Image (cartoon, rainbow, N blue to C red; front, side, top):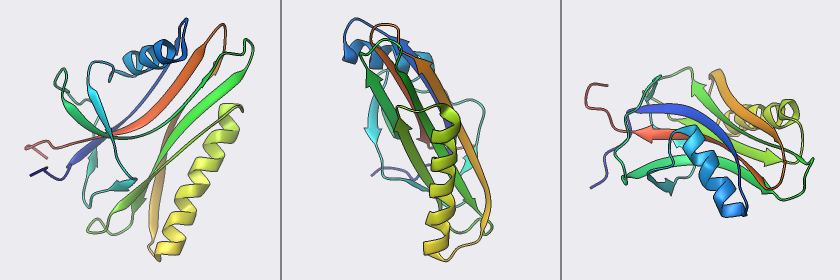
Length: 158
């Protein structure tokens, strides 16, 4: 049985490579999750889940994660990815994770993903305490990739 995550960490990275998958892999390494197996999750933060500044992930481990990424092989292209976490007023309620990526400057991508959190709380009928976000922008040199994520993890101490 999979344990419900108790902590999360927002991460970001970018990479350049000869091929799209290599650029993506370098972005994962830059974000600190490159030597793990990512298990993409839908976008819910469990109740009372806490943000932490450090998560030690096992090499090769199955890591629950919600993420945004985009890759481009057009030199000069601007690419951005951003993750946002909506935290509820009531800690017994779940929060939401929203992700967005585009060929736009980070400020625009971040504004969109933050609004997505606000909207998600509105149609759930929950009070929103705050939105936390983290994003990355990159100008493609040859073949670039950007990645922003919420890593979810079970920590027995939290």
